[in-house]
Image 1 (cartoon, rainbow, N blue to C red):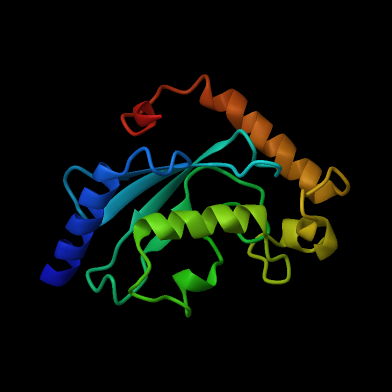
Image 2: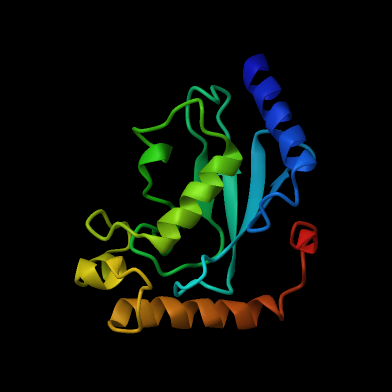
Length: 174
């Protein structure tokens, strides 16, 4: 447990030092528990998620970095690899392809990449993943297809809601 605390403290210092290095990610440690983190990630450009800000919750196990963190979307998102109700993310590095070389920051980058390049053949959101995978794999996720339209509409609706929600301390970092 001491090794995981040391590793997380090192990552915390790195995040503090390089806040402006990655403007698409705001990673924040809980004030009272180093094993709980929150991230705000910006939706990748030229995708249905462009313009959106998505909140992630990290639950880091005491065996970290030997075991991956549990990460889920707190912001609702319509994506084939994200469970719509729970926010659970289907991403190999969070399961069987985890390596201690990954950091919480690099996990955020991998999730942003997944948002831009979904894997509809391995869906957690069956409504989203059951449509032809070519629609999700299109480089720009064009407006053809019901899934892309749904994802774009859902993101726009979330943007409207974000403007009316009372801002929490994490959101003030944006």
